[in-house]
Image (tube, rainbow, N blue to C red; front, side, top):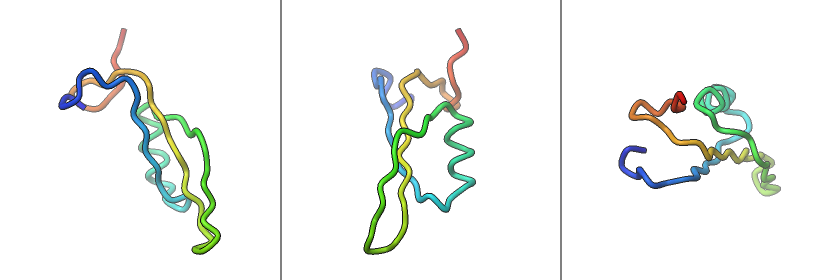
Amino acid sequence: MAKYPRAKRWTLDTPSWAVRNHHFYEKHGFIRTGEIYDAESSQSIWEYERTSPLTEAGRLEQN
């Protein structure tokens, strides 16, 4: 994220079954914003977004 210091919004998606990913992203300030269901594979993808700045370590900035 230091590579993109002017970025104001980060988005990502991860499979619904990847519980460890969910915990990791939420711990780092991402909020679940949606879910996409893929009927062909019968799986869901969870969408996450984060709008607050990150520090070098990828943690939330402390104001």
